[in-house]
Length: 139
Image 1 (cartoon, helix red, strand yellow):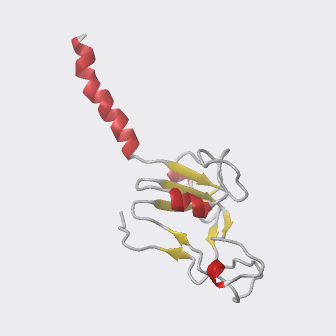
Image 2: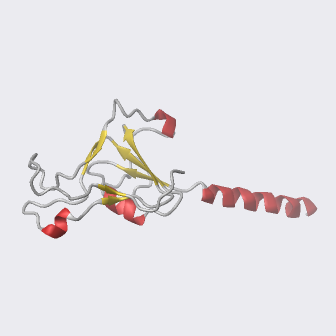
Image 3: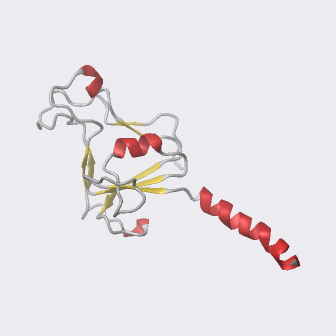
């Protein structure tokens, strides 16, 4: 019984340390899941960033991502962007099968964040800002 009491703080530490590591959210073009795995990836990078808390890593599969879409864009549409919060890490370059960040290959699996929200290929009616960070550390 005494060994159980001695092991309890160690088990508590392991549980706490695993929570500090944070969560990985998986994003893929046309994903429809909750982001818990590649098979269940979300397709909404902006929502993943908006809902992320410090310690979260967001792994993004190759493709092009837009902060919003519109066919006839108005000022508010053009004001939409991807905001990266302090403590949240955003990584692209994934093929959608990786289990370790060291497996990503940014050359083979390019990931683009684009402001071409009306997807017409011109510079007209694009987002004013694509990626926004403020008061974030490099850690």
